[in-house]
Length: 137
Image (cartoon, rainbow, N blue to C red; front, side, top):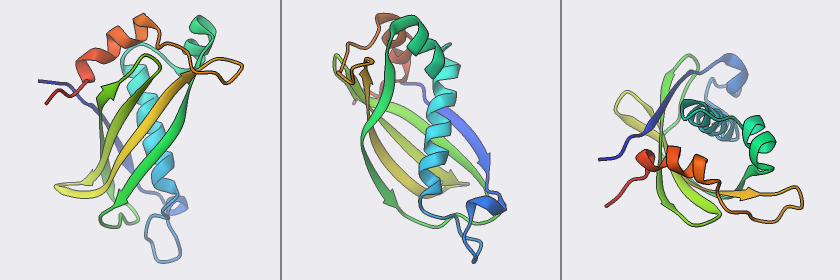
């Protein structure tokens, strides 16, 4: 059984369009916040990874499937877990839901790179802390 990262957010006026529906690009911001909080949950931050390992984590690709709309003042939950990894990258699935309704389903490929924008090996300390969140079929 794997663990998952859970992050809750509330939809504010600034997140919506004139009709009170979350503007599509803001879902990417919600997902980024959830990934940053996931790092924090395992004892890291983007700044700490850069300082300690000389690396940063970047999004290589994002496959996003919009299922339903979220609205002003909705309370959303973002569930994040890892489905695969390689030496330099991993795939994180993130699901945004409202109660039992899936709003957005995403698959994000994240890569560790150095200051020259070249892929680098995921630091062993980071990988060790991520392992409980890897979903195994």
